[in-house]
Image 1: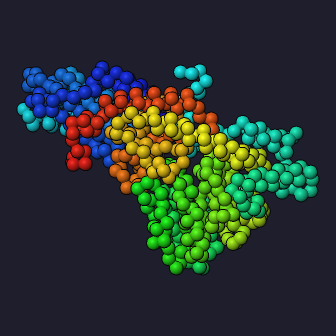
Image 2 (image 1 turned 60 degrees about the horizontal axis):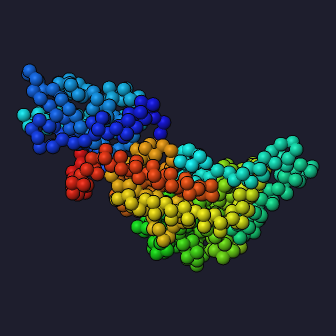
Image 3 (image 1 turned 135 degrees about the vertical axis):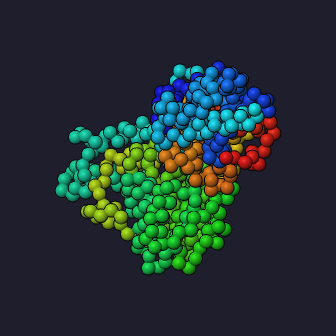
Length: 134
Length: 406
């Protein structure tokens, strides 16, 4: 698979320094945590994304994010890229993030676009989960 | 790291082998003005005669490795063409006798795709499942055989798993039922003994580049006693007794001949060398949790070892192993986004196919290559599992089969 330099770098950096790149977990039952998990092992990719938020004005802002991803190099890179985009954003802003933003940032090859779609789905689910708790 | 390691470490011998330096030497002496460059079909001068002599000598080296008559060897462009010629050639010649063919789900695409084509032409094909260990059983063949079966095509050695099929038993059965038997032996030359004088095999495909010869050349064994007829697939000049037209590529043919001559001479040494590497590798991965060897260890060759690293996706593992050249059954490494059909045919869960890596060793693999691979491998698996939500769930005691995935 001929990946862009960006995918390879993102993948390797995440692998080499998991803590710095937000690999980990929050307690999913905490009220300030929203969890999204998408994909299936049989399809070859599963992404788990967790956001930790706090109220700010009329909205809620994403303070911290943790993720874990099982999948190909571009799936891992896509999750990691998404995480960086999320920190500090309000939930409304986070909902605006589209798979295209991730695909463009990483220069994903067309055959790997589904990885960015999965990443978009994971944030949607995490936000839904968080909002349901409020 | 030892300085004589060449990075990335090549552990993909089942995909192709480097040409043995002695073979390369032989090839280069058959290319230029001062070498044997002639057209073997030229009957009017010495250049042609010399080339023909070289081609016939190579033919006898190939025949010698598998113990058949050199007149039973037909040169092709590789095993893919040999498979096509055997399967379509028999089907087209004998279609008046019957229109049923038996093959298996773990065959190479060079067998499966011609079978698919024949289905479009009105043939009926039965695709057998392997047993859990990755072999095709005689029982399943017996159960599938019919009055109108004209051909059985089963590979000798599976390219993904390294498992061997019992071609002796299958051949005897086929012969007793007067069904032609084709064997794709692209992977097995130089790895296991093949004695065609004692096997009931009618057609056998060979490749040079899996046995330290050049790419672009192979051969089909076409039995003379009992005789099997095939309809040519390429016409134009009537070379190779009309079975395969086209100017013979002298340099590639002598390359294949030399590679097969060496394979016979060095098979014992090659086998011992690779068996030792295989054991070293197995000992080394023993400490990694939750790994599964695909294919029965007792019925496979040591050249190939296919392992699923549970909870880690194969393509990401290959990326993490950038200093090692291997291949994966993962969907993400294939153009079709489908995980390996061979691993799926074993009846295991799809995720084990996604998590599989094939390591294949050969003549030029060293102990240092294996040791270095092992040290990178366990580290890479550990780091990817740290990243894997499935590994986390596994450690938490979650049964992944009971989770509803969306």
